[in-house]
Length: 284
Length: 344
Image 1 (cartoon, rainbow over the protein chains, first blue to last red):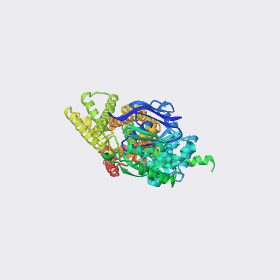
Image 2: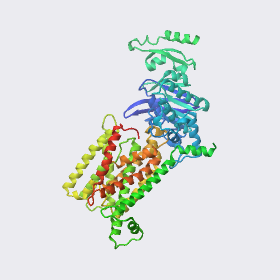
Image 3: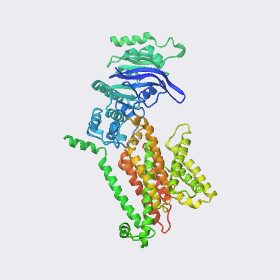
Image 4: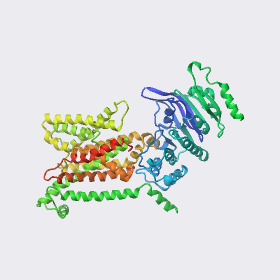
């Protein structure tokens, strides 16, 4: 079962297409992560999936319906998004912001009903924001703010969550904290999660499915095992990666890396050294 | 805690109680200031007489005449103008996330005055009904040019850049209006528009304005929830299922109508739309479902008081109301600009 089908889309600004004829399927009830270097079009892809950007050609289907043609409020009941640059007016309280997640279900002035309060309270609870729910957003740390945005998306009560770099600007602990929260939402409630991440190791550790992009095209996609290979990373990021095993997920992670030199492309990505490190970790 | 209590507890956090108190308090203050404004002025009138003028009108009494024909329309005009400017400012600030948005600062007022000058010059006998239509058109023109000029800059629209564009466009349109006024010798007709006086307001004007006003304010209220979401950023609003294109278009039309109406009554008064939404936000939070009604009331209050002050500072002369409000507005603007255009 595929939640989202991206079918031969062209997307771009003005006259320049960033994505040309791209097709991909996002599996239901799984965590999917898009990776790729800066400017590879991963943000453009996720924004198109989130209907923030329009397609110039092709179509995106959510549960079989064309996302840019269905009433946007109906889509908002099935898919919540967290943009990369989400920034709220600092004076809003945590609870207020989260309550806006109920907008797709509202008519008129949008006063909240009992059911809405239940969703909001649950979202506050599951993101661990109960103690700060009456504080102004401006009084929170970066990690807490990101949780508030996720809580707002959760209050939308959707099966699918789309997140554009949810861990950017957070320190190590807070990054992991957000990812563990997303993992829990996926495991316990079967939510489909699609996100862009910069950190390859996080992507590998938490994803069921990875999509690697370069120059507006999908270079490779599959399980972390299939995507996180030396050859792929060289092709996608132009790096010579030393891979190892993540002690938590047993998926491949990038221990360290060198830049590939263009003239030494053939020598790049020394499979031997990489696999040596790989096997050492695997056997040790 | 049983469920009922829990629900109450939660509702508190969305601040309705505070909001209701501030709205009620504001309404009472507004009522009080309206009564004061009717009784104080070049000719002081007792409140009792005001009461009688309303309920036991005697056309032979000069005071009753003053109250009915001069003070009432003027003061109601002041209240309407205040609400119009304030709500248009609030909508602009929310929609564009620009804390420095105001119909005066972004060229709408200058555009409306320019069209009024054209009206006086080319169609001197145009009825008021059509004059306000030109005023709307002018406000739209001013805003269009400012956004056009602003978006020419390479690094996109920032609040300050828009204000700069607004200042430049306002100066240009102001100069053109003055040129037209001089050339067609309509300077006197325009004078009170420049200075921002409400003294010319008549019942006739109010009658024509009121339907537009009610329509625009009602529309603003229905847009208040989506505007709140837009104030969180375009992408967030889209994600929540807001039809951003439609909301922005409707809001723009309302803004132009409100600013155009206000200018057709009082002339180019700046800063009301800047100050009032910020003060209301300070008290009532950042949800436009509260901010819009708040700005309706407190905008009216500000301009009624300013008009009262304009009349009683040095009677029988009147201060220009625009100048009085600028005394408040300029420091306020500097404060906001210094804060670096924080989020709205």
